[in-house]
Structures are given as structure tokens and as C-alpha cells.
Image: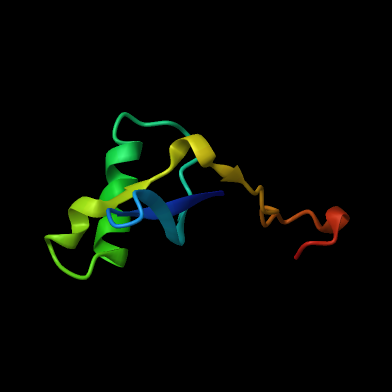
Length: 79
């Protein structure tokens, strides 16, 4: 899973402000990954349609957090 930071552009301070994160669960790259993640972030974090324009995701600042996958093999201690 990849944790992707969602930002809102603050025009008063002229800087991006982190407002949350979304998780990408896709294991393979598709052609619409960026667009789908942006739509998800806009739905989740925008107050109205006009505010959705100021929301973007920072793919250059992806913090990769690899979470353990659930397996039937209990040798790693995960159930």
C-alpha cells in the first residue's frame, strides 16, 4: 500500500498545506492511477465543487509504507 499526501493550495500564504492522506491499493500501474486518486481525494476532502479545484495530490512526495500482506503462511507471525 502506498500512502499519498493530499494538499490544498492556500492562496493567502502562497503554499501547499497538507490536509490528509489517501491509500493506493493497486499493485500494478494503470493508465488512470493519477486521475482516479485525484478524483478520490477531491471527493473526500473538498467541501464543495469550487473547492475541489484547489486540492491536489503530491506524487513527488509519496511516502511508501509497505504493510505486511496477509498470507496463509504463519511463519512471519502474521495471521
